[in-house]
Image 1 (cartoon, protein in one colour):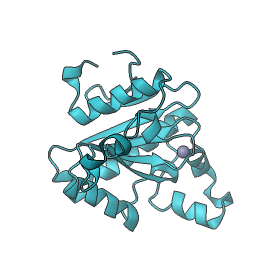
Image 2 (cartoon, rainbow, N blue to C red; image 1 turned 135 degrees about the horizontal axis):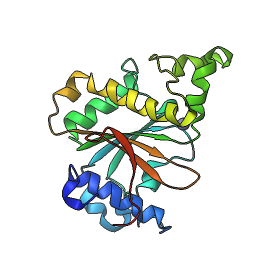
Image 3 (cartoon, rainbow, N blue to C red; image 1 turned 120 degrees about the vertical axis):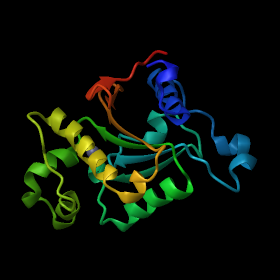
Length: 201
Ligand SMILES: [Zn+2]
């Protein structure tokens, strides 16, 4: 992806941050410590993430962001449940007040929450209630396909939300982080297929 093809500057920053992370660079220095005055009274994040609860998938680390760059909402299954008041409040604030450029649904390889969709009846009630709360499906011929399709299903739910439809400049992204390799796949909306993000400029 060349710089001119980024839909907005926020996505450029995210993918540049990802390359920083992939190359094994240390986390960037805390924005607060260096530029506290700039963010002490306001925030201007360029993106919101809806990421899985999994402890191995941390958007701030994977995209080498500094404080104030991204908002993160995490839950099992990186799920968009329009009946979840916490999720909807975060989304509404991010879109209307913070006017983020991107909402990224971030799934990952070996997502146990996706695997468990096949056996909701065997799970503790609290976990089954959440995973089944919005009708998520294990959809696809393979585990990897089901993980990817889950991300696409969550994006479809986002597109049906009225205040997201009204946000004309808002870009919706689906990504998969591969834990075993550190690689990142992004759903290319124009080509309608998943493409690995380049690890070099
Ligand atoms: Zn997961």
